[in-house]
Length: 462
Image (cartoon, rainbow, N blue to C red; front, side, top):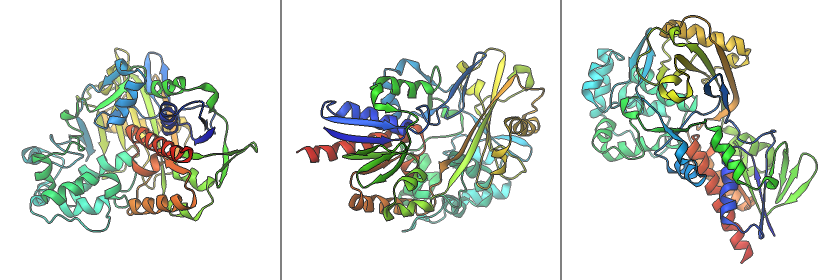
């Protein structure tokens, strides 16, 4: 019997197990999954409290990426899908909430009239942004940072006030260090084909790009009626319980042998490391993975605050706001959960979800829960007129949880994978550190690793 070991019981590892379980003969292939924590599901954590549904991990996934909806269907959860109720978002800048210009694609304007009517940019900023229609494509042979790419095209003001809050918020990183090709390659492709992003996105918007942060975002996101832990719980329930091992830490990998912390040694025909790159570096003492050490990790936290509806006199219609880094604020964004996901909040109540965590912001995450809740409330009192004390709050810390795709990421990853094929051909890497941090990305990574492991087993069994 051939043996496959999966290291990591988060969404990626569970997805890998799901697809291996589907593709292999259970009598011919013995797969086992090991998770160091005492539970499966990784960062997914849904709390049900006083009629509220609170996500302490991710709260939704993009419908346009097929892996997410495909897995939901395979698990029989399609009838539980919920679409976000409204899509308009704002940027907080200069003591005011500014609607993201209609038609913007990840902060990039495609509607000139909407850009000119926006009060987010100065007149000089608007003129500089419109020069993008005439600038060179700025597509290079080598990788470049997101910040450099967009500043060359639109100028500093639009990057700081509009583009950075949106793009940096996804990865909790510094856009002047983050790789364009590893994060948003579609924009480089549009620039290469049409020269102007504004023209290219308006005239021939590719399917891989969403109009984001405006009313047209309606329908772009999905969650499940009972919260996203429903997804990971369904994965666990669908798999043979005897093959899932919690509180079982892997200590190291020696060639084809997986060594558990309890001393057990398992010789495997294929090994899937479904974890971030820091785990790979701790398990695999091999020159092949040394380039991964250059990849930093950032920390973030969410603070969900429940209030009576009267706590905020007037919240504009929309999903919430992002914060431009033009003021001295701690939060990076705030979601109005009662507007985005009405089913999660009882009638007459509101739920505000504040975010902390950005490049260089470390100390805040060492605060107590009460201090973090007070930090978020202090900002929200100024930003949206929040009043009174919360009914309760839920804090979630994710330290060193968000991999940063810095410039040159794809080249380093290709080198690592090429070297691993020679030095450790039975080891496959999957997880947030490589090709996407979203839920569908993690599911697809698990499926791809499962496919590669199964192909290897087929070759061995011939």
